[in-house]
Image (cartoon, rainbow, N blue to C red; front, side):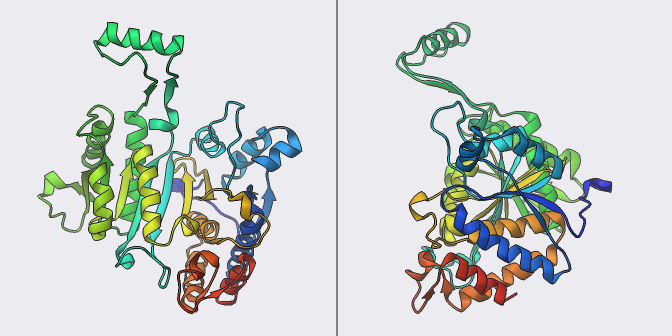
Length: 392
């Protein structure tokens, strides 16, 4: 890290990658082709370093997530990965979640925008241009639970009744979700900083505080505290400005359920969204559907304090398509764009976006888009990547 927390990036960085399970064997080589070409155009070379996770790691080492992989990501700060399967049993809920929690990648960053020509179920997909900051370390990701019918559940239900007077049905499973000041404020701080840096107009704090006032509601309250205490010169809350922020970033809040409706009916009301984990999960996928689906939705998991970040395909492994050179590599390519932006390689990132737009405008697309576009030329995963490279 350099002064002010900026990354000091050489022109030939070492970047660890995980190929990914299932269709990772197809989409990662396609993405690498594009990323290498864009880097070369700007006089840069990436020294890719493969690390193992998921099925490939288990087959080679007997571990789904080897210590060496964690150590490598920790050492080199930045990484990228394809989709990973979740092992059945073994005490790991999700390899993706494990990586985020071990490296304290507290922001799940999900930008959502439409590319001209991409099939969409909404009438005005071009109005969708949002960035979601989803808290990545607590809420249900750190949730603790006991199974219905177990002695542990009976003990917890009895204790909650005795200590707090909470009457919970005896045949319930019970879960606890933590939402802390620390995690909430650092997530919201990152969202406001992003909005200021990228000249975005607003940050919306999405929560369910009308029901859960001390977790979801507190998230919004703490967001306003961050705004007043740390960003008063560049941001202002709705209540403090009467809805007229002037040249400052407007910080406001919205209930989660109505947000899922309004991102459809009033998308221009939303710009940067900061939210708790589960709300962010729903919103990310719902918004991705508006702009072409999860197959072209990028994601990054970032710690803005240490600089650690892992960028990733946001979709599943789709094993039935593995090795067919068929699926859309857009998610991992655009995650690479996010990685370049994080590295400060903005020109290379912009070139890739323009090249993707040009390929889609020429109706050169993979099967998922071709079946919905009149006159489209369906190409393989690798051919789509090659078309992007041609347009760089």
